[in-house]
Image (cartoon, rainbow, N blue to C red):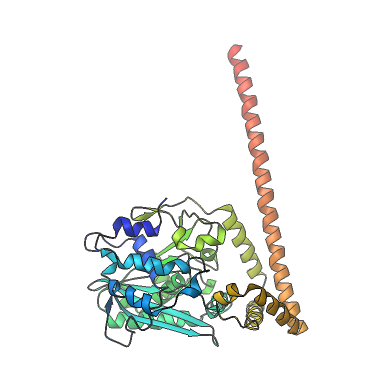
Amino acid sequence: MANVIDYLNWRGDLSFKNDEFNEVDNLVLSILTYIDFEGIVPSMAESGEVILKNTYEIYKNNKDTTHLKDLPFLKDVPEFFKLASQTTRFGNIILSSYESQLDGEISKQFAAMVFSLEKDYHFIGFRGTDDNLAGWKEDLQMSFKDEIQSQKEAVNYTKKAMEKYKGEFILGGHSKGGNLSIYGASHVNEVDFDRILEVYSNDGPGFQKEFLHKEGYLRIKDRIISIVPESSIVGLLMEQSVERHIVSSKGITIFQHNPFLWELMGKSFIYKEGLTKESLGINSTINSWLSSLSNEERESFVNTLFDVIKGTGADTLSDINNAKLAIADALIKTFKNLGKETQDNLKSVMDLLFQEGNKTFRKVITDDIVEFFEKRREARREFIRGIKSKKDNKA
């Protein structure tokens, strides 16, 4: 089966005037938001713009990507950028208003940019979680905060972009970027709302329940397109009230979060009827665990976990990958230095998670056994009915 890289070869020679924007184009642009365009694409405060095909050589000559070499998905993004820049469809896109903010002290990792496909027709792309641990901590904060830092920035960015540019908009992103696209769109005023055509969330996590009842979310809800792989984990976290479109993927469980593994044909994804049993089982475990904790307990767990990680000196996933033994040793030492109450809290939460995991595992196994024997009983009943039917015919 083909993937988004094959799509560049299939349809890369077609401009948006010759073939309108589609769901796979959304994924291409969402992937490109992971590129570090700092110093290459003008910021929101600047008036300039650049063409995508003119940016790759600058990027290659000025950005070091060696730290991404061991990271699934992220390591392939620079080469994907190169291939996209060589196509007519994406190479001629105008890039502008690049913003990137990283602050480890307040756990903020945010980036967004505007892709102008045609005059007065724009895609606002929000970056998902990258290599920085600040972004990973921020993701976990979604479980107990009404608004995380990057969501606040997404609202500001969306409003500024819609003031700066005329025309119509599509918003989108992968992972946390999908969450930000929905959050940003839900805060625009009623006039600008009519300029938003679609909002794409590509395996993006959901929200706390209260958010789903807010006026802004309800207003934008019908324009949200939520796409998740068949064994999604990230895209099923938290709450969502829109239909999920389930895509076939070549990955296994959490690795299906990698959009390069999603399968497509032509300009459409290959869809499945439902999520896999593994996906439902894992998410049942996570949701059971979260529902058993108060917001205060969730916050304590996240802060303690990242205090332990911070004690190792690691700032990125690359740091952890490049010194696994040293990191493991530092984790153990840091944990030993924590106060007894903090240690007990961390242990109890992890124990609870594993307990819930075992419950779910046992339930899945039990369901499989029950289903197996039910099928055997049904087959036996069919066999007996067949024998009786033959006897009745002979009689």
